[in-house]
Every structure is written in structure tokens, then in C-alpha cells.
Length: 259
Ligand code: 6PG
View 1 (cartoon, protein in one colour):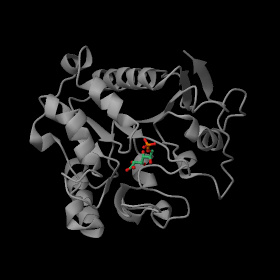
View 2 (tube, rainbow, N blue to C red):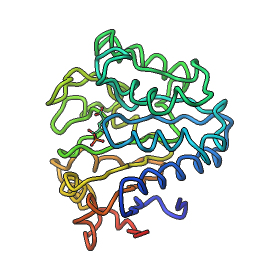
View 3 (cartoon, rainbow, N blue to C red):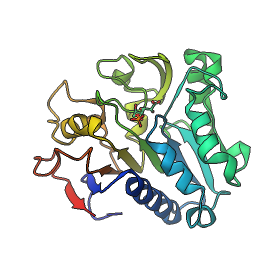
View 4 (tube, rainbow, N blue to C red):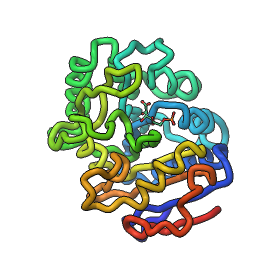
């Protein structure tokens, strides 16, 4: 965890297992370094984070974590119920939450079964109930990157990506389940730390586009728009996803560490 600069840090690792382990170590270290006695993390959906969640639920991490201080949120959710196979909450429950001693009132599920618009308003209310009127100050926002460069449920060219004030909006995905609830870019960029976990050769082009993105480019992928005002960005990627990164003129000259 490099605190010396706010330039994005890129760590390229041999495989998905080492990505998950390094991400787990970074997240737990962030929690232990949190200056308050609360630690809020927004989890991601999709396939990549499952291994990370399993690792957080096992030793040595599970007993290092102060579960009585963690609050679990989501970066996005599909407009489905908590038991639907597409649910991002269900992914975290099956791979992490059911194994750890976190109280239910510290797990802030997005109620997708209410429909995306209603669920977005309810989640926005819950975020403000906890963080007050300002944008949510998440300690960590965990993100994957789609092959089109999307993050959470902020897709290229979407209305949701243009939101400048609200913390949460509903959005439409190009692929089912289409109705989504998502943190907005302002909410993601209010985070103290954004941790991208990206694996697989199918992400190599998207990741290169993100790292090499020109801030002036109106067409840059959503993931390239993640630039926390007062936060750190970490790209923890495997060699397959990082295939095109070596020698890439980085967007903010991130240091690329091969470990
Ligand atoms: C979702 C995720 C989404 C995901 C990317 C990458 O709800 O699907 O939040 O943004 O992180 O699509 O997904 P994979 O990890 O499956 O590649």
C-alpha cells in the first residue's frame, strides 16, 4: 500500500489467486489504518471478487478483521431479490458474509427487488443516513472493470455516467439483468481508496485503454474517470489482464510493480 503519492498504483501479479490475496491484504491493511472506528467498504459484483471474498472469510484475514467496525455496502446491484443468482448481495453472502461475525445492521443491501428507481432512492437515503448530507466517504470502493471499460453499473455513454450530484442512480445495462442501481462517479470519487481487481486476457484491451486514457478524451472508458479527489487508486491485476500494460504511457504515470 503506497501512501506516498495519489498516482494510481498498478500491481501485476501471476494469477487470479495472487490478485485476490494482494487485494485482501490491502483492504485489511486499509481497515487497520482507518483512523476512525468505522470502516465502510463498497463491494463489487461479477465473477472476479468471489475469490477475494472467500479469502477475507478465511485465516489469517477473518480473525484480523474487526467485523464489529466494518460496514458493508455495494457499488452496484441488479434489480433482483437477495436470493436471485444475479444478485451481487447474494454473491457476497454466499462467499463471505455467511461465514463472518458481522451484524445484519452493518450490511447495507441494495433492495433491488423494489425495482431500480425505488431501490436507488432507498439506498441513497440509507447512505445519507450514515454519511450525512455529503457524498458517502467510503474507506474502500472495490471495483471490477467490464470488457467495455464499465465500472459498477456505469456503462459507456449511459445517462448514469453523467450524474454529477447524486450518490446513487438507477441505470440500464447493455446485457441482462438490465435494470441496475449504482453508485455514481462523484460517489466513487469521494472514496478514500478505490481498489480495482482485474483478471483475464479478455480484460487486457479495456485495462490498457483505462491506463493509457487521455483525460481530455470525451470517449474515455468509465473506469478511466475514477480519479478520487483525496483518495488512492490501486489496479491489482493478473498478467493476462496486464498483457498490454508494460511500457504503456500511463495516464498519470502510475508506477507499475511486478510482484
Ligand atoms: C456487476 C459488477 C460489474 C463488474 C464488471 C466486471 O454488477 O456486474 O459490479 O461492474 O465488476 O462487469 O465483472 P467480472 O468480474 O465478472 O469480469
